Image 1 (cartoon, rainbow, N blue to C red):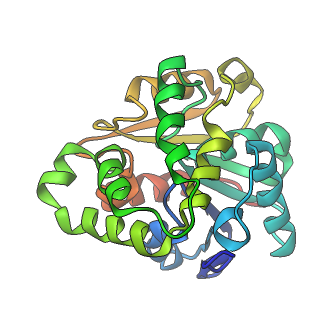
Image 2 (spheres, rainbow, N blue to C red):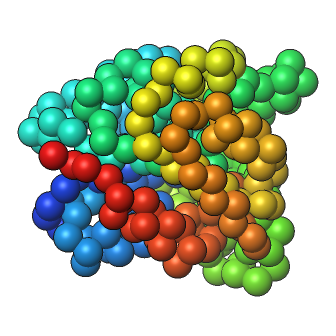
Amino acid sequence: MGYHERFIEKGSGPAVVFSHGTLMDATMFAPQLDHLARRGYRAIAYNSRTLTGEPAAHTLADLVEDCRALLDDLGIQRCALAGMSVGGFIALEFALAYPERLCGLIVIAGTSKDYTPEEREAYHRQFDKLEVDGMVPRDFAEWVAPFCFGETTLKRNPALVEHWVDRWATTMPARAVHFQGGSWLDKKDITERLAAVRLPALAVHGEEDVPLPIERAQAMADALPDATFVPVTRAGHSVNLEQPAVVNAAIARFLGNLDFS
């Protein structure tokens, strides 16, 4: 069974909901929750189904419904929805399925593009190794770290990287990550559908992102009718952890212009 609580909540006011990336959990948004709670927002980060229950195969559509159910359970009629990596994939799909529930969309280290056949094959090969009992093997955690963090962070902030390597190896069920990967590895390219997203959007992306080169995020932002694109220097895939001050400032500016009514 899962080892993580369903969500973390801080502050009160207009709701901002965060959905984490693969291998990560709700604690990855601690810098954002604290920052927004101090500024009069109800900031919530929730854990994916594989971290709170028995890991099993699921789809992005399932994860969209999980997000909707959470909003219903928390009595949130409308919110700003933010997602990192697969959380960003969920946020885009949620905006297409339930636009009436959102006042704004924040995509952190995300894209609307699909993966190349070569990328899918390589990722499947690695994630298939995680269909085992216990936590994520430390050798896998160390292997994946350069995908999750940018070159600058690996060199200048090894304590942050080691924190997450240790967290993956001690609190992250291997099968949970296996099924998390399965939810997005074969996802479709939805870029052409983004014209239907009539919501203010913010895209934040690290310039050193390895698994999702910044050009893919730019293409997503260009396809959204009302998007602001913020590239972040000296940051990789976990941009909100690597450069929290920059990301927090961008999010606060964006939220300040939204109509939460």
